Length: 261
Image 1 (tube, rainbow, N blue to C red):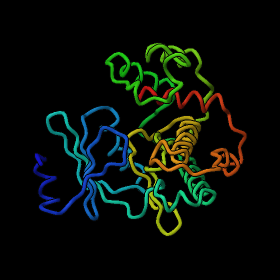
Image 2: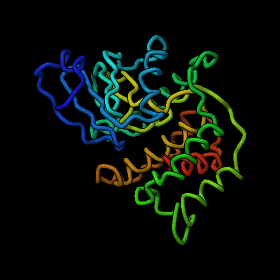
Image 3: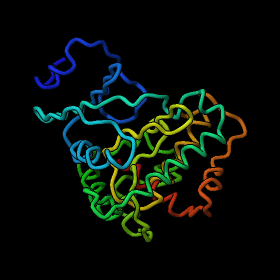
Image 4: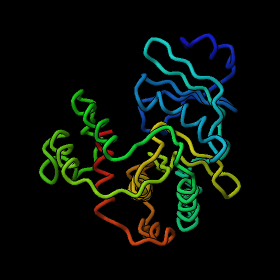
C-alpha cells in the first residue's frame, strides 16, 4: 500500500483484513488492535479525528494514533474497539435486549455537554453541506429508499433539497453521533464498548440519531442489510425504550435529509 511514512512506521508488516460491512466510501483496513481509515479529503473526513479527540474523555471512542493528509487523501489510524458490531447475527437474535442497549447508547450521547463542541450540524449547516453535494452531483439516487425518488417521491435531489429547505422542523439540539446505525455501535460483555465512524458527529437535533437508528433497525431486521428476515420485529419498540411519542414528521425529515449524504 502507498501510505504516508508515519503510518508505515506504526503498522509495519502487521497482518490485516479489509472491512466490507460499512457503507461509506472509505477504505477501512483492520489490524488486530488498530484500524486505518483511508478516504478522500472532505469536510466529514477532515472533522472525524478532531471530534474523536474532543469526545475521547466523554464517551468510549477509538483513540487517535496518527492522522495524515497526502495528495487529497486522509489517513486516520486509530485503536480498534473490541467487541461485536450491533448488526451481528448473535445480537440481532435478541431484539428487545439489543434495542434497549442501543437506546441507552443514545442517552449516553445526549448526556454530553455541547457547550464547547467543535462542530455544529444543525439543520441549516446540514443543508449547506447538502447543497454542495447536490451541486456537485455527489448524491447517489440508486442507494436511496424506494419511495424517495420516482413516481412516489421526488423528481431529483434538487427537488428534495428544495423541500427540505421549505419544511425545516424546530430543533432540540444535543450531542449527535450523526450516523447512529447498527454497524457503528460496538458491543462487548453485554454493554456498549464504543462508538465508531464519527465524521458526522457534533451538535444536531435529537431526531438526527433517532431517525437513522430507526431506519437501521428496520433494514437490519427486514433483510435489506444482511439478507436475513427476522419475522415479527417491530422497530417501534425503540420509542418505548426511549419513553417518547415518536415525531414521525421529524423521522421522515431526517431520513430524507440523509438521502443527500
